[in-house]
Length: 239
Image (tube, rainbow, N blue to C red; front, side, top):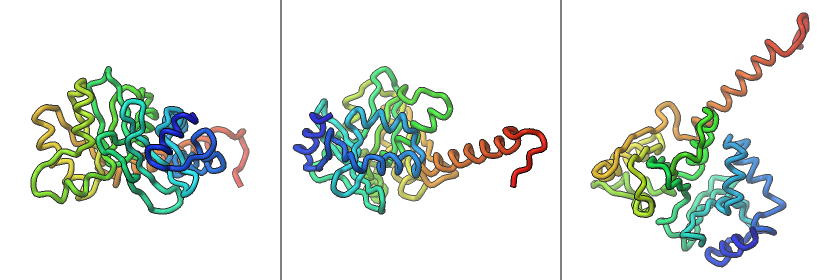
């Protein structure tokens, strides 16, 4: 809505088009998230409707927004056309991009918002209600934690847990690399004192979005093979 867009512009200085979305470029954002990244369109539209996902009007960044109550407090920018990603100036890491379900005691944790949305999509593909859990993006905090000699907890995770005492189980889906695996172990060393913790990083893929892209490709290939085998009349030859 315009009201949310004005709040975002006031808090962060991120310019938006009419109705809070860069109207001439909105399809770029949806194409990038839904076609390139294979995130479910319903999920993308849900976060757009909540004012948590925009495309900036000037630099074609997908902007992922976190809120303190009804006020925007965090924005992470990811360019649609090039490898640029950065927290916006003035962002409060305590309100990193997230989804809350006060009825759930499970929290799924990711390095990036793209991975968070990807995992929701993977659940939806399995006919699981993706709104049944809590989700949190750490916004790229893993490198600093992995580089430390001692265990540590990210600001985003600490703050989310303080705001959500319903959480009892934390499932980590950080990247399948040295940084992701190292950060997971260091965070779990502290978190497991008060929570059940599970390391569920994607073993066969570099991150959750990579897993989604591969599974989407397999599904589309299987569908194509099925169509080739079953959707043509007897005697029809595919040229």
